[in-house]
Amino acid sequence: MPDRPETGFEHIDDEKCRLFTGYIEIIGKKWSGGIMLAGVRGARRFVEYRAAVHGISDRLLNQRLKELEAEGLIERTVVPTTPVLVQYRPTERGQSLMRALQPLVAWGVDDHERQLREHG
Image 1 (cartoon, one colour):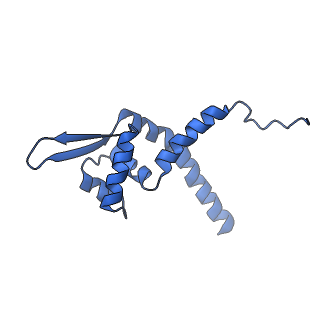
Image 2 (image 1 turned 180 degrees about the vertical axis):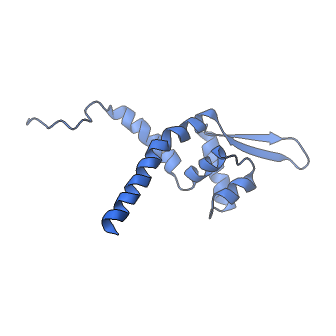
Image 3 (image 1 turned 90 degrees about the horizontal axis):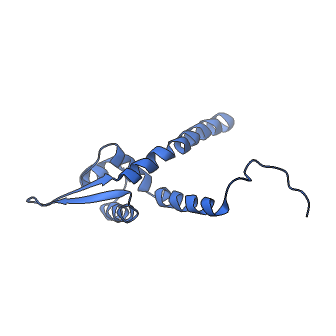
């Protein structure tokens, strides 16, 4: 077998890479990133999330909130008032994920600007 050149990525464990990919697929699902961003910026009520995530339908917002709750990224609280008040907030795990994504967001902005410079 011929020697392969070193790439600098030999230390990456395949199993850990697959685990990371699973997390990226959760947050990368359409609307999920915007919902999480709205939450870390202070949205709590359904209407606040809907106003912050432009273009999302009520049905999809409800679906994504349930999915993010099932993943432990959003916490749903029912306040027994009249009418009932339902609040959604990012869990510490969700906030941690959003902090961890910041370097990837910065890379995306840099890459977008680079492409604009290169391709006008």
